[in-house]
Image (cartoon, rainbow, N blue to C red):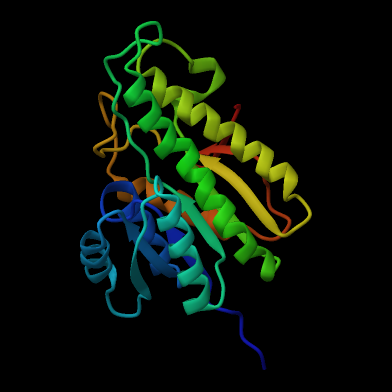
Length: 236
């Protein structure tokens, strides 16, 4: 009797905060999780902390802003594990809180876009061929309420624009991949207590992480091209 394969997930920016708790939640669900971080020592430390009894976790260096790092990481992961089923694009920066769109710090704008939208795009492009080999994939892009159309306003313009771009990428990829077995969705975790938090927070990262498991384990006929907060679908 054949058994179902052990799913393999990559979580970017998984050495702390929300990314680490998402990695923990996926591992506790029986998924092998590749914990990634820009600093290989940080990835190793997080994987060691997360790898409790019965949990399958491994570390890998991954800098989403470095094309060579992305290519190397996904090629190695695909070779070592023979598959890649789940990608959580969590790595991001928020470095323009007090800027305006009319008077931007273009260096910060470029750095934000490179990490939050281009970096996630690089990871998607590297992961999708591995997913297509097995006709199965779940991509989860971590976005923000601040980037939804109804909440686009002043403050943190580069961050908002980068996440709005990620929202667009989610919808485009979902449509392109609709008949391939790969589902692409976005989730906004809300006011989670992390280093990227804007203002008041209302819950720890572990509380938000459980919602990622649902999107990572959707059935083949599950939704794609959608935006979620907790268990609720939101308008883009």
